[in-house]
Length: 304
Image (cartoon, rainbow, N blue to C red; front, side, top):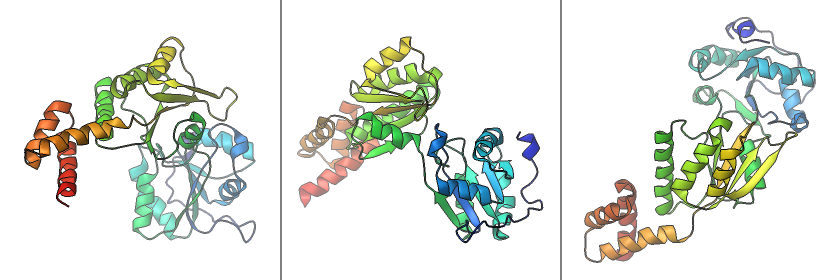
């Protein structure tokens, strides 16, 4: 089913599907998680909700049409993606007010996580309309538990910026946060053609630390390659990757925050908070706001 075939407004007449039984989905918006690769991962509840929905909103209707056909589901679908979401919100809210059952799916995995739908959900919540979710597959969490890296805490960051200058700046900001105390396994998605250069930029920013690249999760050619950032960058520089990719970097060594705190404590002995923050900012290259905020905390602790 093409997007063109489903381009009619959702405010058009829409018949309510009869429920198959008392456990059918109630009226409202349901965020339905779909498989990230293996069709066997679709839940029974996800099947039921999709089958009994009056409308299914899809990131790509052609992609979802294949899923629905495999599940033996015939349903009305319409596109909801980054380019049309704002325009779709008002008519969809009208359908929800009228008591329709609407499912929202992405191409794979959990909706809204690096996928469209957030603005619609916010609008529905703001109007007090019912919003619920059918949990299921998620590539970031699946990669995390397979990576061998510390599972908690973790920070999922979506896709890195595609341009190298912006990407390096983003990694530099994370590195500054780590020096200020952030301790988490970091998770990104990345496109295959950018993987090698992204890993190189990560290695430059974060140094040699444990990392993993998960590829084609739950599919026939699933691969989880573990190593360190520099070694993984070298591997993918000569071995082109394919498929859906998740990149993970372990937390930093424990001495990073201690280095910042140690420098600030030493400076605070003879200087004001502002002066100490300026000295340490110049010495470390960290963002002034990050250093100053940490200096305030340490000053309060010292005076406590």
